[in-house]
Length: 215
Image (cartoon, rainbow, N blue to C red; front, side, top):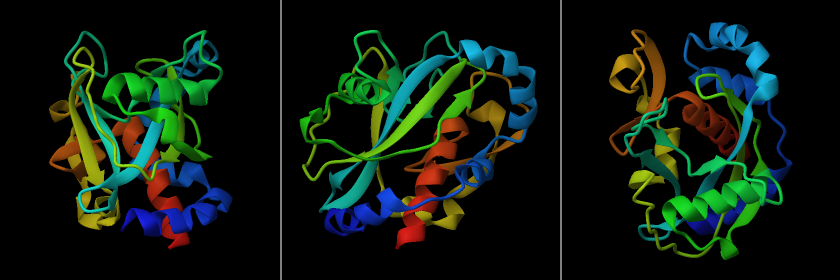
């Protein structure tokens, strides 16, 4: 899909109503329901985070979205694929401002030309106690990327069409894609050679269902 075609369908994307829970469930780890039950008292004290599903022209005007591979660190999301974003800070105007600020900090893009398409449903992540607010955003401008060496190992630009290929949905052993020992199969997208699972896959599942519904 070209960026021009993507921009044409944005008004429909904004107006569409879907059951986000159904979309999330498709890519949720099998243990998520039990984990939510075990940690439900933690939610009221959860930390807020904003992330961006950033669509932009890349590689001959194709529409792509950007993922990052996080550096290794002492934390539950070490060396995992995620969307650019991070924690709310007191100087942020709102959680959307958080998503844009963190996107700028992590991948170095100019956020002045980035426009909001729609907010997606929040996803709570029990292991890190984050309540994530995702936003679909886009720019017509080609972007220059500068990664934050402290947080980002690699910037990954994925052709949107890859999200619609059914064979890119895999079942993989959690112990191979997480620094926590997860001896169970989890659903994941295989995108640009990387396994994308957990909250990021759940958010992308909602994005996929929205866009497919308006095509």
